[in-house]
Length: 160
Image: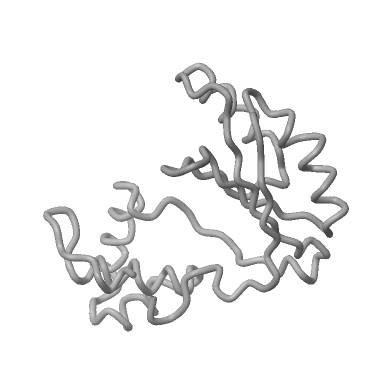
């Protein structure tokens, strides 16, 4: 995806290269980034710092194997709200952020209002989260669930 970016006034092809490399392996050292981009170490370090300061890089994280941890069950919940006024949306946003099993929450343009990615140990645990937490979120009118049978792609990989 980063390979398809066009240069703008803030970033150039070297910056895009740094972003692409770090999206695949966030543990690359500055020396390795410099080697792979064709820059010397100091200019590479300056560029990396600038990309962080300007918000192009918002953080670094470890990729976790959730199957090994026993929390590999993924379900997607469509949520429709009764009320979509700004105060109702704010109340929903604040409450959904407090549910640890909800990994992602996206506002959707379509026949429902939100799509939630929910991670649990199994379908029984998901059912409890749906019944006790998601359904009781402020202004929820209805929900529908789609259970993931297999994750084909979840993160950036080389060439993306």
